[in-house]
View 1 (cartoon, one colour):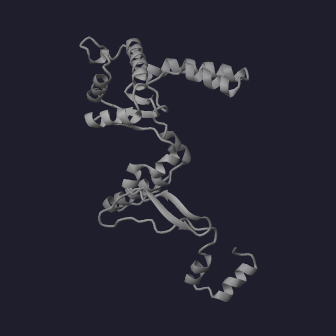
View 2 (cartoon, helix red, strand yellow):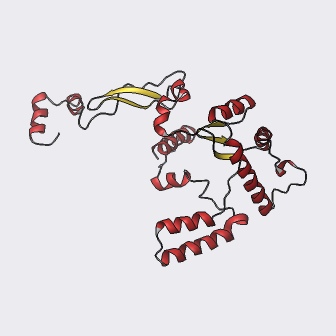
View 3 (cartoon, helix red, strand yellow):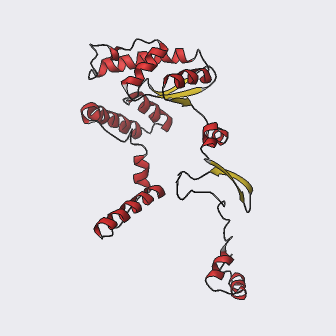
Length: 251
């Protein structure tokens, strides 16, 4: 949400530069949360409206019966439509999990060729608007792919995909990313000294700017760490600051 505010402020300043008019910028945690779930927070009316109406009815009845959350969640997962693709998901390999992300038929064809899978979507008679046949084909392809991916390690698959230009990568836990080769090569991990807890590793600047390069100098301050410095800048004397502290105005 903070980033959304920054975007809005930059856009508003640019607009003011062109029009001379300022404006109010509003952002909310709710709007940000919904935008981050855009894949699910979307209804394709021709494809999903009737199904979603029936799904909501099932969930409503389950809640009225007082079913547990686990029961409701299982019913939800078994009833919802899947827009997923066998070419845009994660797969278990011999020694871990990897993700592939192919959003074009050009890339999907590469994966199908690598896995030696006969995908009907690349045949002349294929009808992408036949929901049932598309779902059946995707399910069959996914099952085949799941078995094939188990035959090699993550490293072996990534070597093949990298060589042939297929977007893919290993699935890692957050803690593993602190020592990730690509993360470190991009300068996205910095080590700073915190005044209370000592050495801290954390995310570095997320932007690279050619003329005004960014650099992380300080960890986040402890509560009240710079109170004295700020008050001195505002003109308070040492005696006045001590009086404020004795009166519990400042910590």
